[in-house]
Image (cartoon, rainbow, N blue to C red; front, side, top):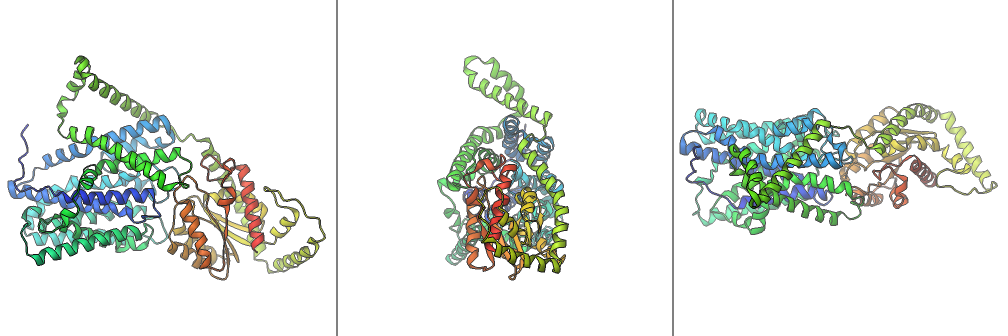
Length: 636
């Protein structure tokens, strides 16, 4: 086999390991401590810009040196670099869930195939998978959407570069065209994004995310690494360093401030962030500036070289670890540090024993190597153990892909059945509650009854309270409560008993509902005359939310209505503490806001819940409904 000609002027830019480190730290902390680094997801555009720059830079150098691009050779190099670790991660992950989490095997053959073909992001779009609904057990493959976009880019880009060089010739023209295409991609993201809806479609789509890679690619035509001079004027160096430091500072600031639910992100924010990264990459690439030195150190080099493995293994490790720990929310940073250590260890092993060796491995000799492991005597015992272990893992994964069992969690099925039953019951009860609430004559009658009952209450012996049922006096008061409840699956789970306790409550509960899309739902209820003077809100279970999103909900409800917000009991999720703290802090801002502290009331009562320790089971729902009814009565 003919060896590839080495590029004469190729530079290894050590600072890019530091840039990759910045990106991967952002991504991991975004997943582990989202309330602390809410913009860390923007590490992915950093990867995209760097990849676009480096790949196009190498293709341009190859064209200049050889007057052609070896497209087939490019594909072979990409496969050797990326496939071994990807395939190993897929197989070991599938083997693990076959043994320990069978409910995650749904659609596993399609997930496996679409990742190998680099079209997994479109699989996620077609199956309407959400990147932002964090409540249910997430797929350990969710993060691989970005690798599919890069894979699609690698497939077509060498051919496109050759065509651009042949037909446009001038580098400035090529830069202009690619930049325009990047801008069109950003416009698509802006036009397809809908305020108040789940942005997963524009987050996953190749068409709406390609602008970051294209910006890096465009940069390489006017800023080729091999043509940049080390000796530049002091003024030039100062300008480059100023641009580099300021762009780096801006990137870090955005990491801490730009929520993934902000409409600004999808309406130009991510594009301009990618432009910022492009400027930063340009300063790191230039040998006459000091940014390459700033981003080069042993730690950054170590992490940067392993960044591919770190990115690959982060999600499986997080998903599997967190499925075994029931107190993630109580100790978020301690658990985060444990998970980071596990990710680094696994990624280092992958880098040492998979990524580097298999780039040089002669795949034509695969079967000979396996045979040699079993026929080489004692000296090949390590190879034999490695081969046997690998074959066993592959066998388990293959079994999992063939069997493909459906979810078997009984508690989960019981919960879904209960929510479905409650939804049907709520339709009937809602009609009655709304009819009663809209009857002004009934309200007058009920008001007089309320006054009458208040007078009699002092004469009636006080009943002993039960935590699972209202007293007669409380039930009488509850019958005079007119309210609208809006919430997620926890409210849907408790709807039946809650409406029994509060017969005039209209309930609108939806599985997976997020705070960011609740404002539109509330406005719709208001327009239909279904939003009463008292509003019960049960949101925050599925993910953290920003104060801006909270303000949108409160504005939609209006200042003339009283708001009773149930805080969250989600000990298995990191956002439990931040969400509850934020809700408590908002009482100072909104005089009509009352917090129902379900978290404190239920904290040490795991026997009230299904296996997820979030949704009350049939017995726990009695505590849930009674407690909320009492809190409403007390505050009205």
